[in-house]
Image 1 (cartoon, rainbow, N blue to C red):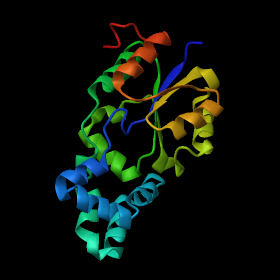
Image 2: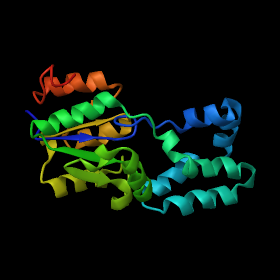
Image 3: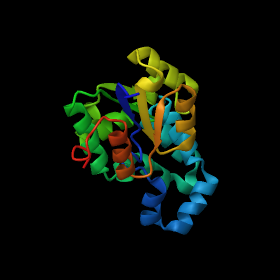
Length: 206
């Protein structure tokens, strides 16, 4: 069945999100490994993704961990350098779908303030037909409730939806709802999947 709407994750689908790579470049891999072993930075980020305030959450963690205070504050102060570069082919696919009248939704674990900040650098983040941003919803993938709320809000369900994400656990929950899915490992594979679904031609998916 041809899907009626396409759902994009954002991190590592439309924009690369590699905090470890950033820290490796700035403080070196050995110090980065030591910091990540001592501080649950991804847990800190999960709080932001669930709607906690961006600045206060990160600065509080920095103040609570004085040995790494300066480095932790980089998660906020140099955040856009972690959320880069744009995956241009994926953005072209998003726009090609919309040009054909196919609705495109986001479904992303993203903070409220960090998303607003990212959108000042990446205007396409304001161009989805529907936004499902975890910070506003106060629930993150792969909690089943976020998928239920996508269906409830959009009025679409099951095979009406096709969803791509770079994390297997997020894909697996979508599959329990009967969504069509694609594990994102690069934009060409996603392009091929959209062609196979009958949503784009080969030429449109370039």
